[in-house]
Length: 177
Image (tube, rainbow, N blue to C red; front, side):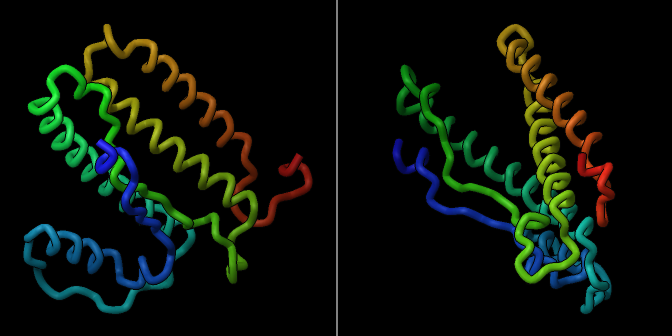
């Protein structure tokens, strides 16, 4: 039980060198790791990424990681169900933690303001809540209705918070109020 409930590793997606490859090359490398051979010539040098590019790539990496962790959790739970049919539902698998510093770690960066950090954190929260809402939507409503409502309320709150965030760049005094 402790072997699958206590995180054993963490993957933190940072901007560099995570995004040191052009996006098509990085995507081909990910496919190659899954057994699909790359097609054609791939660029070697990336264009300088924007903060938005870095965030999108980190969010995509986290989504792929979450998909893999969901499959791993399903395998844990399937095995546990066969071994402990009376208590497998109490298992809480959490073998790996996924996170990103993109937009939050401003050490040495002058292109990330506090408003960018706030906005990107809220966007990541929205992505994870939307993922949860989609997963709940695939389950019977009679057992998920309360959690569906809470998730919808949380998504609405995040949308309101995002709407209130100052835009990218240097905020005006009015935007910071």
